Image 1: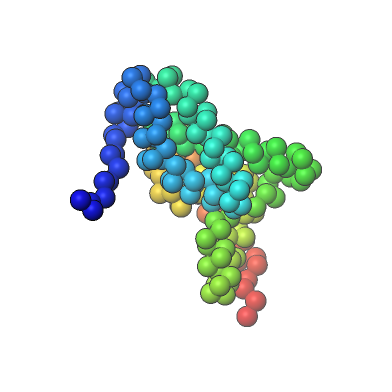
Image 2: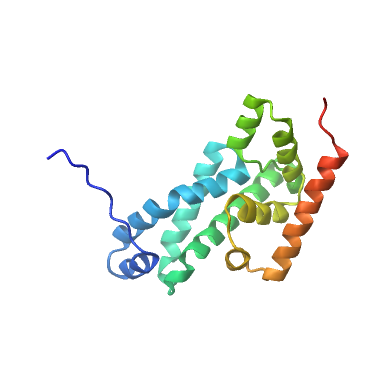
Length: 189
């Protein structure tokens, strides 16, 4: 009588197949399973909650509009992250254009980590985040997907359309730049 009904989970294949029969049900399943991880991914690059919500909404709208073009269920996560990446980069480019600031200077930190660093006076964490923010936008995106999201190079390649070799090089260069940043700007004791 007082039992809570757990929401039904769908496989990626179920969502893709369901889209042909019942778009709204498929979209509801897609949002239920991917909205939270996509939000986290976007938020790590944008920081601001309202901006993240806007970009997530645009991402989901694009997914709704183009879902019929997706044929392989295995491609669903990469396809969604690719849309989210493009929407995030478009948002950052537009914001930079409006503010007349170089895109490489746009703040792309993880807000939870900034808050934790400030609250715990974690100088190393704050410095590391500053180092990540100093990276060019593409390296920030690759670093975020690999380090924070835990995606494999193959998955990042599907999202970005970049070869795995180029992604490995970009990630390695990002790591070297972060290390150099931390060496050049030691913590104030």
